[in-house]
Image 1 (cartoon, rainbow, N blue to C red):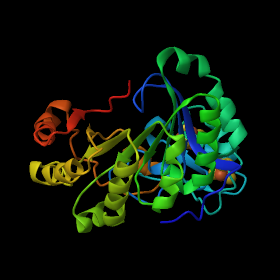
Image 2: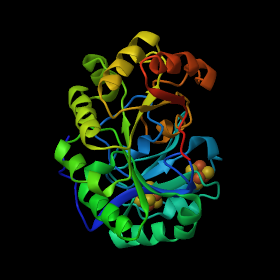
Image 3: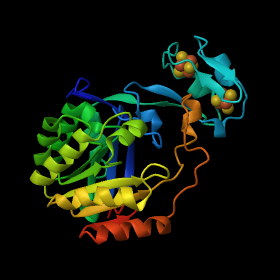
Length: 312
Ligand code: SF4
Ligand code: SF4
């Protein structure tokens, strides 16, 4: 935890998604920053955990032709059944030869250093869509506040351009990094995963106290906050746990809106290529209907609880 990675002129991002509609109102550009100080076991974007760019391998798309092995000038790719054509990230120089050699798009370099100006140039491409739809830009990740100076610079520039700004944070960060950004934000998404600190530590690698304290402080000082709860089988997908979480949120006067995000395995395939264990391989997805009774428990406490990211 901390701001040791913060830097203002440049940032490392793993994606910039245009025409997004789920992370704030209207049509948006979502800037995904690399690096995360939580490691949630169900994470859909495990490639975001590392601050550094890296080669991703998608086994499902791989035709096992072996071209990446011969293309690599430093011998960093090996065929390692059943995982497939894996990368030695210590040896890899990110030259991109294996990516170019792969005709099946099974390899991709994820994460790139960009100047703040270059990110702004991307954001500004869709200005007309923001204006016509009431959209804007959302800073996401990873944990965007690990690159807090760059996010601050981008948010200030967006506001100067009249662009709506949103931030999605997991909140395991010093309060001062959140606080100084608030004047430049129109919308704050705050993730909340469990209320029991031991369980939270087991499934994310970090305790919950600082996050809950930051939720409380954000609720005191910011009007437009949405709390997002990923509903995860075996972790928090039970009425008792979610009711305790709702109760805490209902105590915060300005937290009125909560989104429940049903678990799905969309990012599961990425774990193989990163040689990471995926604990949810055999866990069934949750449907919207599965989560409706949970939402009802929150509504009874006066919260506006919806199922799924509401976006526009
Ligand atoms: S990016 Fe270059 S060095 Fe890295 S695995 Fe691919 S070919 Fe090898
Ligand atoms: S990753 Fe691409 S180049 Fe490498 S074996 Fe698979 S299909 Fe061939």
